Image (tube, rainbow, N blue to C red; front, top):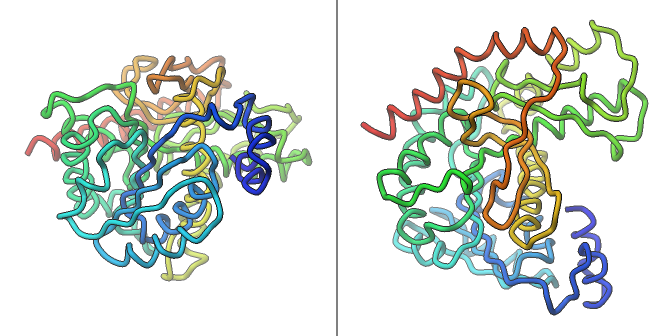
Length: 341
């Protein structure tokens, strides 16, 4: 993603060379839609997607303030054409022809709130947006950012099933921020360059359901068990850390926008046929006894090409996995129940 952004001012030929072998004239046209584009995550995410040369059309939707965001972003001298849409009456126009829909819509967390506290508000928003996606762009990839992801992804799946449009390969819960945090925290303690670090994060996207697999981190560092436990806890509580630091003025918006842009870029590269694009995501899965689970996923022209297994876990990670299964199962069932009310 960063490399894609850094080539934005390069010549078309140089851009093509930098974009993993694409000649500039062969980069496919891709329409990306952001639902909730005027919000705390939506605005920086709109900026980052405008910087991505894989995007040819950027459609920004929100209930209010979208024209200003769209006008602002549209002045940036990059490839994509920007359109802004405001209000429910224009939701269909925003979605038509989409290749990728990113959903950061909803209310943010405030101090003392858990992701589940957001459920009653954000669940209804996600359900309505999913109904529109099923109607206007049923074949688009959908990247769910709206929390609680452990429940909103199942809500979208149930809506799509009712509409007869559900394709499990095309629905993703964006858990990339957990990976971003795990990489950052690990690099700091392992004293290695963060750009070289990889840490898979599995499970879900809330509290103890977030399980970073530091035993599989690369490059490997000889960290103590206590330090691994502390890094795990900090990764799980990363969202709360930001909410408390902002002291009631917001949640993790900038880092979430960055993570959302990273995962969207991976999805676009997969759609465009770039090989070996692997990212962690919360998807329909059979690698555990839970119907949805976050793990490494190989992305391709159809969305999910392969859900990769968990690999070898440490004893601490095995304990963590068993400890959160009931909570994750409950969150998934809560979303399914809401969607079918």
